[in-house]
Image 1 (tube, rainbow, N blue to C red):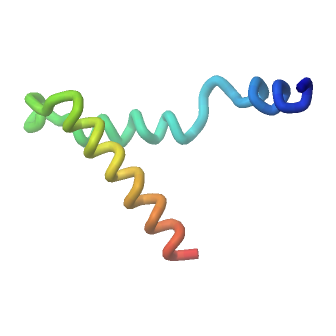
Image 2: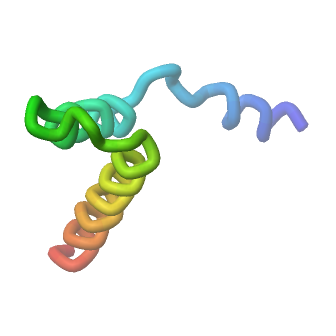
Length: 60
């Protein structure tokens, strides 16, 4: 049980992935898109992430 716990809790508190998502969200929510619902923003961010990951897989 100690090994799995070390792996689980060894994950850094911040990561480039979460920082990238915040950055992408900043581009999505702009002065012209201030009325987007939270659910809509979440869907756009999710789809953007999926498309980026798919593009990375397709190019490798």
